[in-house]
Amino acid sequence: MDGKRIGVDLGGTVIKMGIVEAGRVLKAAAFDTPVSEGYEAVLGEIAKGVGKLLAYCPEVNCIGMGVPGLIDSRKGMVCYSNNFGWQNVPFVEDMEKKLSVRVRIANDAQCAALGEALYGAGRGYGRMAMFTIGTGVGGGFVRDGILENDRYGSMAYIFGHEAVEGKGRLCNCGRQGCLEAYASAEAVKKRSVSLYETPQSAKEIFEKARGGDAGAQRLVDELLEYLSIGAVNISNILRPEVIVIGGGVSASADLILPRLQEELKKGVYGYEYAPVAAVCAELKNQAGTVGAAYL
Ligand SMILES: [Zn+2]
Image 1 (cartoon, helix red, strand yellow):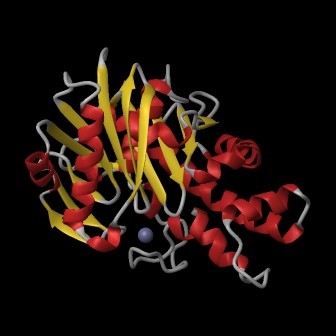
Image 2 (cartoon, rainbow, N blue to C red; image 1 turned 90 degrees about the horizontal axis):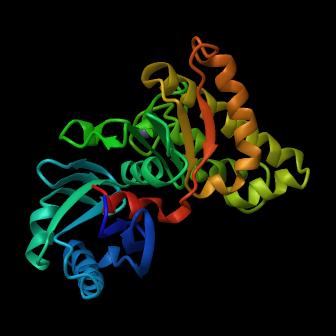
């Protein structure tokens, strides 16, 4: 795993990338994502940034990229990306035409999980599950430092769309009762209009809860209730040794982890024989870049 690598974390608003060595981002760059200008413009922006980074480490011959959506890593296809409105695009083939290096892709949350497993909060654990709680809820599972990255593996571990309510809220995916419809920053923001005149961001709700606001605390409790159901389900199926909570909401880990840990203890089958630890992500917003670099 020695030597310099380049990772790209493609987001709906920002493209992050960096030169990574031994899990550390040595040189980082970020650009606005030109989503509205279309597929070619986004690829052009990535190629421009990568080209500049390659000038610093010409020995790099393969670059990993994390892309939000359903990915077929083996074929290098983005099958569907809600953030970009892309469907069945040959991302790797098109990207390689613009660059002089090989390209690998995986789902962005899975990249973040790989980054945390190798160099962050999942270090030293054999089985790690990660929930990234941002606008949506992403998931990833890493075993012995390896991300399952074949056609089916790259479409697995979609934790945000496990059902936590049988006939619950409508999710962006068109199904009902998904975890994402309850435990994402967007879900908290939507729920906040029932309490406040203007929508409040999840960050604002967590701050208000910390300040003793009872309404905000109810919204935080609701998020925790459903996140716990989701995490217990995943634990009973995949039995990670550790669950890492990442994404923007992880900045409020002090309000999340104690309750989550308590619920895991109560809900996970046979917890006393094989406990599941709940911890906060360590690489913050660099997890995706670092993980992508190790694809
Ligand atoms: Zn869904």
